Amino acid sequence: MRAILLLPLATLCLWSCSSDDAELAAFATAAQQRGNAFQLALRTELMQAMQEGGPANAIAVCSQRATAIAASVSTDGYTVRRVGTRIRNPGNAPSERDRTALAQFAARDKQDDSPIRMRNDDGTAPAFSMYMPLRAGEMCLTCHGDPASMPQAARDALSQRYPQDQATGYALGDLRGAVVVEAAR
Image (cartoon, rainbow, N blue to C red; front, side, top):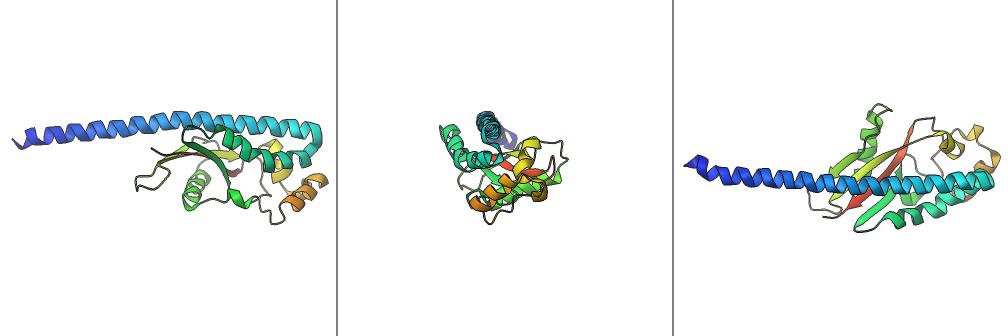
């Protein structure tokens, strides 16, 4: 008799768990698309800015256009933003949850760039978060690498725009931060 009473409870738990898994999988797919769209659009504008006006022009794009690009892919209840391991723009400072994800990326092998997905079961917003690591590539090092090897125009633009800049000194492949995609349920 007890087994008969437990069967509906077990079935409900399995349905609920698989429903939660499906919900997280649907979020992950949509979040990945938005994160990729943000990165592609920003990279395209940065490369164009570098070709047209060098590093100082790219710094202007990063500081002025990145937020607009993130807003353009932040639709249908999803929010896209960037956080850094070192602060350049105080508006991109990581939260406690962000720092947890960044620490997980830092503990991984540099070749593991799989996203981190989080479900926030404590009832706080956002309900879901996905973190996609940002690693320092060749182009990134122009403005995020060793200041002594940066072009003077980049150093000047950074010191003017970001007098408290800490986001330099990265080497090729270093974790620079993450693209974060969040959504409510």
